[in-house]
Image 1 (cartoon, rainbow, N blue to C red):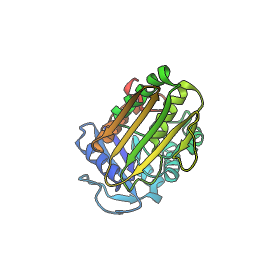
Image 2 (image 1 turned 30 degrees about the vertical axis):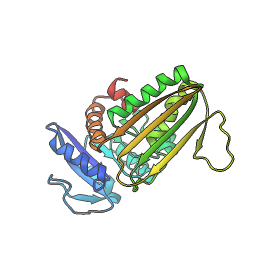
Image 3 (image 1 turned 90 degrees about the vertical axis):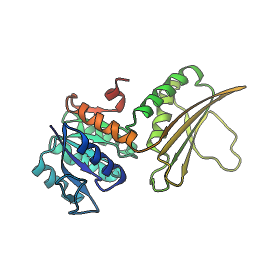
Length: 255
């Protein structure tokens, strides 16, 4: 049985992941933390939501095997530190962690195993691989990345869009990123990244490779958040037997 703690338990993703843990025969929720919903039941399990500030004490008293984190970047770094200090493996889906990447790697080092990904959907990880393969052949074409999410998403552009850019630039070499355009801005040797926020869009990512007389479009659309939750469950099982260090979903999926 894999004992699991989750931060961001009262958020949209947190609540859905708890449902998936409840339905998994090899998993058990032992702790749930958030800034809201304190002392309320965490899903259908006999677990009450604890305040996020109590994370160290909660982890010590419940001894989970894995901490799943879906919060915000600043909070996630602290949660990662507490989990590592308590020798708890990690699955982190919080976005906006790019500025903290070196710090997080140092914290985890050879202490625990962690899967950290901006997007846990299986299809998105295949999407990134397809982008890298396309870039190997048409990386000299004009490239534009567009992403759309629901109106409540706080960060822009999405971590998935930034990973798309990284998947491409890792193949073609450094290329500047332009976030939107306005006024006189003739196209140069850049990758354009554009963010749309509206309604209840779960997640839509679109990459355009435009050449002379032709173009290729590669798109991924998430129909529901279950696409992400299923990947989180898969990563949670995988991280239990992984060597210490930081991994992405590409390793979980064997890509």
